[in-house]
Structure formats: C-alpha cells, structure tokens
Image (cartoon, rainbow, N blue to C red; front, side, top):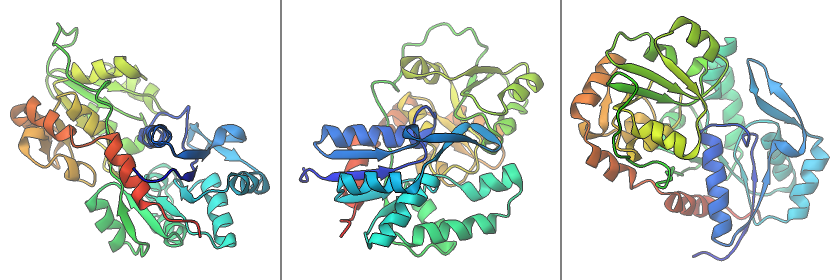
Length: 338
C-alpha cells in the first residue's frame, strides 16, 4: 500500500445526481478513505446552485472563487484532481495554474456531443474548449483505449492515463429466476432518461417481449406518452436496482455518446448479456459473442445478444472490474502538486 496522501477532488457532479460519474467518484472516495488517504471533495452542495439549461435536474455551483480557493489552500493537498469541466473544476484548475501546481483531470462526459444534441452548439467549439481545459493538466485519465485513441486524434496533447471502472458485486449479481410479470424476453435499459442517451432508438423497435427503462430525466414523460407499451419505472437503487438487472434477459445500451457505460459492466455482473452500438465504451467491454452483440442495427444487436450471450462468460468478464483495482489506478495516476 502507498503511504497515506492528502487528495483533493474537485467535481461538479455529485449527489443527489444519479449517474455513472457520481457513482465512480463516490465509490473511489470511499475506497480511498478506507485505504487511509485523507480526501477533500469540493462539490456543489456547499454553495448556491442553479439548474443547467435543458437539464434542470443537474445543479451547478455558484461559488465565489475566493471561498473555493481558501478550501484548497487550507486543505494543503499532496495531489489535486479536477474531475469535471464545470464551475468548480474551472475554479480549482485556475487556482492550480496560478500557484504553479500540477494537477490531473479526467474525461468523463462528451459535452460537445451533448451540447450539439440539446442546443445545436457546434461540436468543434466544444472540443476546442475541452482541449484548452485538459491540455493544461499534468495527466488526463480516461476509461478505455478507444477513448484515448479518439481524443488523441482530436488534438488532445496531455499525457493520457488509464482509469477503468468497478462494479459492486454485493449489489449486482445473478438472482434465482422468479416468475416475471412481464412478457419475455425482458429488455432492460438503465440510466438517465434524456435525449442524448438514444433511448428512443430502443423503444421504437418492434421486438418481442417487454422493454423496461429504469431511470429518470427530462424526456421521461414524453417517452411514456409516446411508447405506452414500455415500462418506465423511474429510479431504482441498491438491491432493488440489482434485482431489475438480474430479471432481464438482455441489457440494451442505445447510447452513442457515453465514454464508458458503467451500467454495461453492472449488467454483465448480473449475468445479463449486452446489446449496443459498436461505439466507444461497449467496444472495449463487449469483446466476444458470449458477452453480447454490437451492431449498427440495434434490433440485430438484441437478437444476437439473446442468441449468443452466456451467463458464466458475463460473470467472468465482470469480475475483472473491481473498485479496488480502479482506485489503485487512480492513485497511481496522481501527480504531486509541486
């Protein structure tokens, strides 16, 4: 084990948001503390907040920079990690640059694609801003080789280091099959219910069985109205969420814009094969037919996953993704501030 360190993490994504970034950060922080490190999380709850246009469920901090900077200064960190590109991340990044401190960042979210989808902002503008943000860091962490290759091709010159993801086996595991109230095959999506997630690609398919969506977001009411045969269950947590995964016959991941897809690994840990597009994230995880099927036609991917997916193979693959390994990578990637 490495010597205990003082680690400051700045993030605009935190509870009560429900998404893969928050789960990753929350579990990493808890694991770091369990290992004896002292961790300070600079996150929005300590400050006034405002809802994001087009996505009011996400709240951004309206913090006076001097208050944020004082927290950083008084904590006396050995390492600073700027996890997001929002107001808090920008403030801590600026402070580090002014002090001449080295820091790391992470690429979690495809904001250029999301802004283009939601507000028609040109993707080139978004990537120009993200290059400026991340290229000032000593290192940037990404989850997969395909994302690293993509960002390098887009002109990111910062050193890139791998930071994978983990899965909580106590929550996500197979259950004994019980009689389902839904017609099989049960096709499950878990995640934010928003336009950029491609959920409508899934719901409009004329596949047999039952389509289930677990999660919430700005387009949920509209999708419920237009696809009454689908079951939109809202948020589920803990064992209740794990039971939703375990009851599915196939997990459908219709997003083309995620950087990893933590839910994909949670499905595999539940013994459920995955159907997805062949894009960054799924192509790094679903690497053989026993784990599911990737195809440009989502209906074909679903049929393929149902035909070739094997529970034992899914479980064996998911076992490679542990939070202990994930956190060890994170610590290894950190740089001293001076």
